[in-house]
Image 1 (cartoon, rainbow, N blue to C red):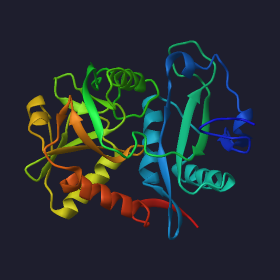
Image 2: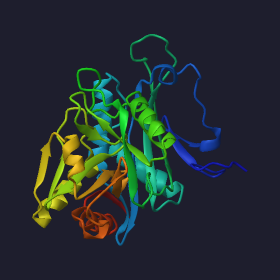
Image 3: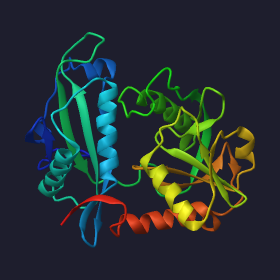
Image 4: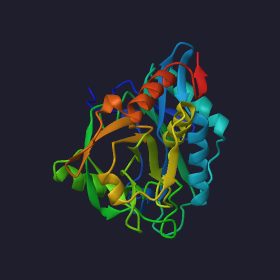
Length: 300
């Protein structure tokens, strides 16, 4: 029997218009994506709700995928609506209710430094908890900086862009921390490798406005929640001094959801998590994702 964290002997994936057993799926070792990182992906959460299985902000995710492909001059034969339908069938075929969905577009064989002529479309799903766990995180400041938009298209979720974040996470864990915080090229705090960063100070929230961040979908939703609570959110440069004076902090992301930061470089947050604005936002988030709010598709 296949032993994997992501699939088993019965798992089915969507690949280039066909339903394929995950254990039987193959790709060429000469894929341009393997050699140069050319390709794009998304991460979408499926949640069981009273009305059925819902995909959190699916429309925003699929639109970002299509935007990422446009940046690379890659075309696929699927619309946003067709990707919805494929994902619905995928979850049904695998009998998944609470799951993480991974659409991936990768390239055919081509060793030239231009997009390959043919792109492959794969969509898989598996049960997956919060990426960084649900406990409070101890962060470190990374020596790796986020690229800026003149170097890479930061608004696109491209495969090659994530090498930078992997290096930062590896460095953090080697030092005994849970995750890293990365700077932008101006030396201000940008984000964690795979999540956006918020800090709380004097009852208000601050998050980076840097062109080096991935302006995440969960980040936007959390900012909407804060507005509902009457909490002011500042999008601005986040300096090291602001870190030292923070009352609380948290990370947001589709895979991460909303998770508390306990310390940065060993410096503890002043507020207990349960007394913070972030804790209120996390509670609202967990309630709404499981009660039909902010979903783009419901599978009855």
